[in-house]
Image: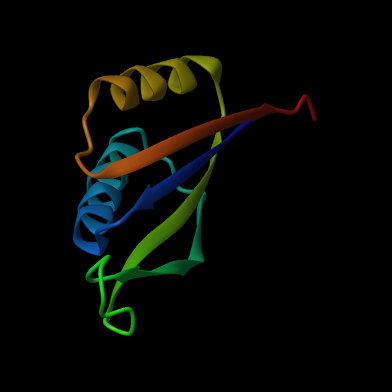
Length: 108
């Protein structure tokens, strides 16, 4: 039994949802029924910058970077299905989404 953990990270929530829909269509093609979905909390990083480097030091501007994360856990029964899934996953492109793949194998 193979267990795959797909970690998805994006700065845009819409592109993350679009990627999830595409992945679920791939899961449906391979008839993968055991899918666990973890919603990781969004992270918000705030940055403060001085507007002018000269006289007015109290004038500041703030920016924030929000990143969204999701984790999908899959259970695959055979090695052939695993290799086919990984080949399709490598060739498909998900713009704006960073993906991590972790594979575990258990003999029992």
